[in-house]
Amino acid sequence: MKNSTKSLLVGVGTVFAVGAIIVSSSSMAMEKLESKMNRKRARYFVKEKLKGNEKAMSVVDDLSDTEVANLLSVVDKVSDLKGNVSSYGNHLKETTNDFRDAFMDKKHDLHHELKHHKKDLKHKLKK
Image (tube, rainbow, N blue to C red; front, side, top):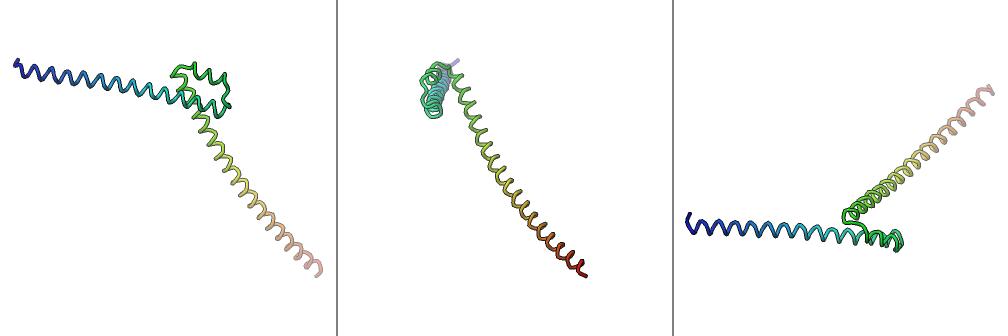
């Protein structure tokens, strides 16, 4: 094999090895950054929703990165459910109002119809 071909292969191999190290270290850095952000979110959750409870804060500090991610996943799902419940509540309120309005309209129509039949009946009885 020629020296130029060997040099080219060594160069390509070196570039590939350096690229693999960079990609590997950047993915590890991203995982570490994500873990820190998740832990910060969990601490913020405890601070805001649990009024900064020290015991809860120390539990969050003792959780593994995976456990913190799972905790935040549960919190997100509960928050989504809470949003759905409020939208269902609004829908139920609107439906109830629509039903009440329809019921009142029907009641008014029946009252008017009964009044009309009562007049007809009185008129027929007079004859």
